[in-house]
Picture 1 (cartoon, rainbow, N blue to C red):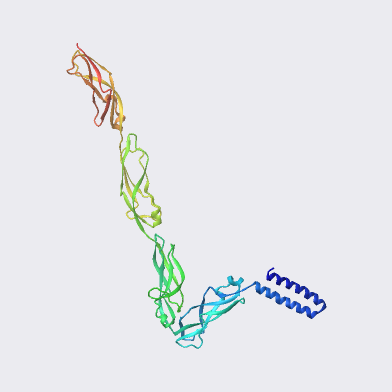
Picture 2 (cartoon, rainbow, N blue to C red):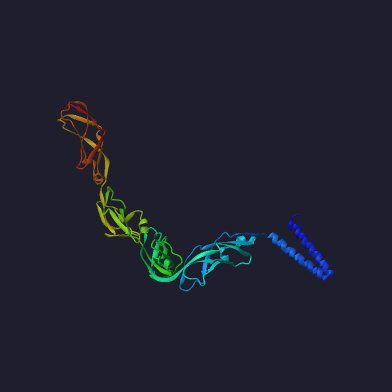
Length: 417
């Protein structure tokens, strides 16, 4: 059986016996109850064991009762550690805010002085056993005041496509006071402004930080006022990108004609605008131009299709020339073979009597061409009687080209008179 169990049972036994005695002797009963209560508190104290150790955090040292006209320029140890006593179950609830470390500077003069540190705690379940260090060296200097400029320090950068056009701060100067040696180090009161993700104008109150010429913070001085209003004007940056113009053309040329080329003037266009606007342009196109039924070139001045906010320095129109010409094709015609150069009385037969003539040329010409306009002949001059294989001679209208004759030869039979 554990000590706590034995003590607990002893307490209960004493309490029962005490009440029994009360019925007989009041004074002995009161004594028994008192003893029981004492034992109970002993049990509680054993159960909640006290922990004595240094608190893991540090306590900032605060100077009080600083003599008029003087200021603290330095404290040898601005933070102290404390050894405390507290029940184990409350240690995790203790924070640095529960402590206050002060040094009383009443009556001190302008010089370095060793001063005791007093630490108080604002909760009753914690005791301060030791302060480390117990004393600190304080340096007092005369208070001086001067005016320093207010500066805006920009941190980060505006998003891509945006830039800072102007920054203003009010007030432009503030008063700084404190120990002379520290005040002399201050070059400016600085407002740190983060530009990251800022796309719109900003007007905000920022806390000022005293800094030296190298940008280091100076502590131990006071700024009046210690804030400033910063106004930033953010603008969208202008970019220019050169795009190829892709004309939008619809419709079909007249039968027998086709689009042979498309020309744009200018073929390349420089478009200006914000980054978002330019990124929205995948292809720079024009308004639609139709060539339905065209038999010749179509020339039009058409507008560019631009997103809102985009600009073209030399105007938003381009000249589109759609060149339309006859389509090239082939056609086949059945043409009768004619005989030339036959002597009087000579009989001649041609097998086959017709051939297929394939002609190439412009479709409008081919569409109006007839077989009668094509001459297919065989020449019997100087042929002796008998059977001969001859290649027909084909004559075509100007501008047409012979592709082939089928069959390429015919059989000519010549008989004597």
